[in-house]
Each structure stands twice: as C-alpha cells, then as structure tokens.
Image (tube, rainbow, N blue to C red):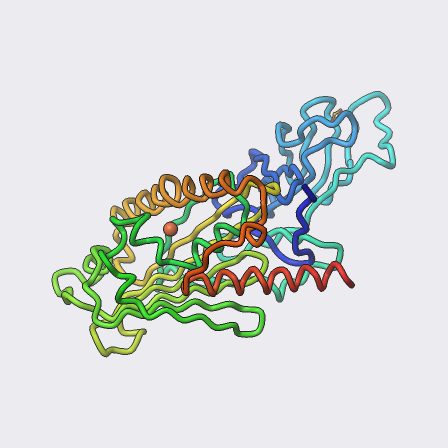
Length: 344
Ligand code: FES
Ligand SMILES: [Fe+2]
C-alpha cells in the first residue's frame, strides 16, 4: 500500500484550546508524534516528541516557562526547539541538539498547526467568530479519535441523511423524504444544503423556543467543506415563512486531522444563539453530542473502514445516491489540490 499524500501548506486542527495546559500531551498528527503544551507565556507550543539525544518521549518531560525538559537526561528545549540547557558535564550544547518545532496559531478556541515548508499563512485560517463572542453565543465542544480514514468523516458530515437512521433520537422521523437537498461548489468551497419547509419541530429546537414553540418550522442546514477537512455547519429553524435569522440557530465547527493513514482526530465545537446561560442544558447537549459521535458516527466509520480493508473508495466503486454529490465533489477538489502541489 502506498503512503498517503496529504495536502501541504495548509492548517490542520491540532487541539482544542481547553486541552492544552503546562502538562504536555502526545498527539500524532499526519504521522508525526508531537508534544503539545501551553507555556507560561500563554502560548501553545508543539515539539516533535522524540528527543534528539536518545529519542526519549518529550511529552513525558516537564515544562519550565515556555521550555520543555527531556525526562531522560534533562536537555531543555525552548518553544522553537533549540536546546537551551544541558545539565550534563560542562553543559556544552551540541549543535545538533534541537527538536523540530511546529508553527501553531490559536483562534476561536481552536489550536491550528501549519503543515508545509512555505511560511505559515494566517490569512488562510478558518474563523468562527461565534466561539469568541459569549455575549451572543455559547458553545460546547468535544473530541474523539476514530480508527478510520479522515475523509470518511467529511463524507459523513456532508451527507446528513444518515441522521435518520444512525441518530434516531436527534432526528425527526422520515425527514429524508421531506428534504430538498442541493450541492454547489463556490471556488474551492463545497456547500451542501438541506431544506425542509414546514417540518415538524425537533425536541432541540422546541426547547430553544420554550413554551411558545410552534409545531412546525422551516428547517435549513448548510454544510460548508473546505480543504483539507474543515467543515462549518449551520442549522437553523424559523416559524414557516420567516427569514433564517429570525429563528434559533447553531454554528458548528467539525475539524478532522489525519493521525495516520487509517486513523484520525475529530474535533467539534457547537455554538448556539439561544438559552445562552442555561449551563445545565449545555452539559446535556455536550454529553448527547459527544455520545452520538462516540457511540454512533465513530463506530460506524470504524466498521466502514474495516470493511474497506485499506482500499480507496474509488477502487471499490460505491453505489451512489443523490446525497453523495457533496462528498464526492469535496474529495475531487482535495485530490486536485494535492495533485497540483505534487506537480509543482
Ligand atoms: S534522551 Fe533526552 S536528554 Fe537524553
Ligand atoms: Fe452523524
């Protein structure tokens, strides 16, 4: 089997901000084991997890200021991976004593890692202003590791028809028959739109309206995919015939980063513009979404992956339904971008 080719000179999600403290964590990203931590300056730092001396795992070391001290013989590395202290003998620092460091950027509660040899381009960072505006929005978040190829998660999110069968408690029964599905490509962005006018209201949105909930609503969900695997979802309802901004909405980030060729990291954040101060609801919402990903989407993607036995989707010639058009287009756009990079 050939090694996977990933898109380069782009940002991949490395962690959620809340995961990183002065105790380093180990996370393998695109095949590289990386120690991630937050230094005393407040900055997030990423160093290759293998000490250049005798290859000890750096994430098991201790953080001093922004530096990380190797747990084996105590070489200390700064945020750029340069060795700044050698506690052995006279303390001379060998020239080769440096750990690879990675460029990170932290925005909207998400820690992104630049992957590529060109200078990091912060203008390419995908933003979620909703996650940084607690006056108007509140959000919950979660993470799972999935033993499946990362593009299968984008396929899952670009085709929400699965919710009727895989998440019956989150969906209204029979909604696929009532959905007007469409897909369009806007430059390198792929957009899937699911429109259901005059739909029975779901439990979640009935709760958002409270005592005054209508029995039926216009339901619109929009999924926007951007290479390599960054998805923005917006789901909103309104009383039939109203403009979309007149009803409760959720604004979501679904970020997928390859761990290896056959496993990936899935980070999610789910913002809402209703019941902002209801912490009890936030807790329940976080738990039910995390459980849906952990117990329903995750296992399904792992089972799919096992049955695919390492073969690419195209090689297996899948049967296609109309709701596959967005995921197929996203795969095509990503492949074109990768091919262009390989050729240049
Ligand atoms: S292995 Fe890190 S200092 Fe020796
Ligand atoms: Fe799902």
